Length: 332
Image (tube, rainbow, N blue to C red; front, side, top):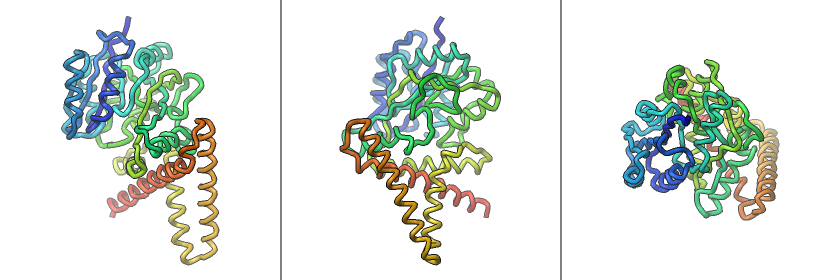
């Protein structure tokens, strides 16, 4: 017997992606009579709502809900409260999904007696530009994302600390509560920490696949990473820690470079050390760029991938540094 499944998609101003996302869900092989898709719109100012309404008029299992508070955790909680499924799946509007995504999530949820199941994401260029391609390639590399298993992939099902999206047993929310509405980013990491704290099991499965579309411009990518870096540290102001060591590396990198740059004004010997560290970083970036270009058989973005790495690390590190500054100000 198939579970009733509720898919929750938070979105805001996603007219370029929501149609493709919903089309991939319409094509899912999971029985439609046991499926509901709840798109929770955060006061979109573009054509997002019209696109969703068009789908909902054609498919009775797709519904549009409103999120007046705009941010993701509010949307997730609205979706959960309005859902009827025994299984709740969080999906991202910036992605589309293989046709067996939902059925495999449910299958592995049963087989492994897990509380949350997720798959790997294949990062795809958002557009046809070289920058879009370079950014996507950078997010598929160890140098770009560290040991993030759902980005790099795994060889077999593996219990992990968090996953992309997530397919949850409904009773999980009775046990753990809802998503923390104070967190504009990282609410899934925080929720999964609470889940694991009560003995919950989170499973990553390599043959559950989503295709994710990141920012397409270097400025947009830099800004996105700045916000991610900020919300990695800022939850400490609420007494919440969501980061692990890999999230702090950009902060150490940026703060170290800035400290040495300032101190080199007094101690000139540090200038050589600063140059050496930055040279090692650039050589590493070009090494991984070559590795990616060789694997992809595409050298068209060989010189752009290191700049995408730099935007990733600088943006994330500066965001984390700014959040520390804000936390310090809050204590004054």
